[in-house]
Image (tube, rainbow, N blue to C red; front, side, top):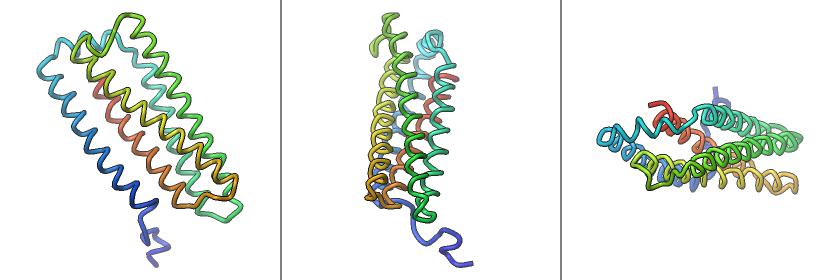
Length: 189
């Protein structure tokens, strides 16, 4: 079987996105270590902080992000297919972007609830971690949603390349991966 048939002829996306992903994952690894540190040194703050959180919105957001990742995969598959697949790729990118918008809306409601109860980033070490890191993640979701919309528009105009769609999908998968680590660390443990 040829390397092309196995899909091993090249890394998907642009090299720059891979460098960005590895650097961003390294920064988030430090965030995760920070959560672990405070979890060990301030266990009461984590126990009481969990009392304010509702896991249902976080579970909904997990499902939403995974659905967005599946749509991003389908967009890449469509871009790699015949030229008539570009229209499907555009649709899948817009579905993934819609998932990003839903995530943002659910997170906004969650933050509104916490801020309405007087919770701030300075309330406790738990909320320093929770609000600080989920807000950085939310910024990543906003950027990812913007990228998906941007490349959907480029597809419509006939200006998107397979590599650029792969790069936007890779970024979205990184955002998803980060959430899959934040969700248990902040909501379940």
